[in-house]
Image 1 (tube, helix red, strand yellow):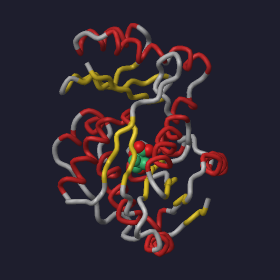
Image 2 (image 1 turned 90 degrees about the vertical axis):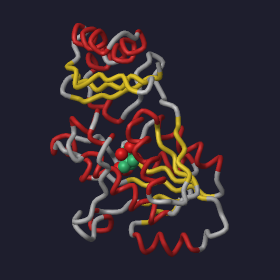
Image 3 (image 1 turned 180 degrees about the horizontal axis):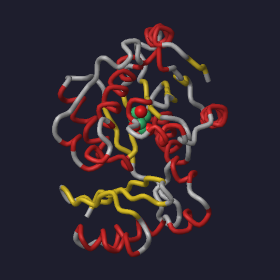
Image 4 (image 1 turned 120 degrees about the vertical axis):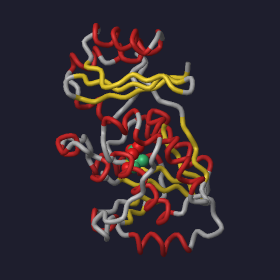
Length: 251
Ligand code: PAF
């Protein structure tokens, strides 16, 4: 696996891959089996695989959340190497934001709802960094997990709005056997928190109205950030031991 740190270097390499299909998985590190499922798909479906590891500060509205994000670059490298990834793009802030975030991409509608309503500026940061990454990597296919379903829909809208030549591929949520959606943030939970967390999915799967689901989550001990049913999907975010967990489910 070749590790690339600058946009210029990656763009040079990309020129040499002109006739190949390139599968890209953008990540913020803290890699787990959910990421691995995307990475394996990217390797299988393309000639060349690229993963980025970049903990993007502009999508964190809460400084503490950014500072405590559980990522370990050496562990991530070892996992990617073992999986058989061809290129790891691991830029720094000055590489990704030579403009110091003077330019940003905003969506004015769906990005203001659900997670966007609770995390102001979050989706501006996501859309901006993904646009930059797609411009650098120029993948044929880019893979995103459906755990961040709102993120996926917004990115899909961005690709259409800006006539971008990339196919975005949604990948199903990977869950623990107990139903808990796998997330880097699960690592921040205590053993007691980890034992309680699967109830989040269990309660969403049991269904009901927004008010009923909210009440069931509160009774189980979660602090509910939001529960919204929209377009036949339940979206929810809760706090458990101050760790924010999200999940969603088709109805
Ligand atoms: O889903 C994520 O991990 C991030 O939002 C992404 C797409 C890598 C952008 O930083």
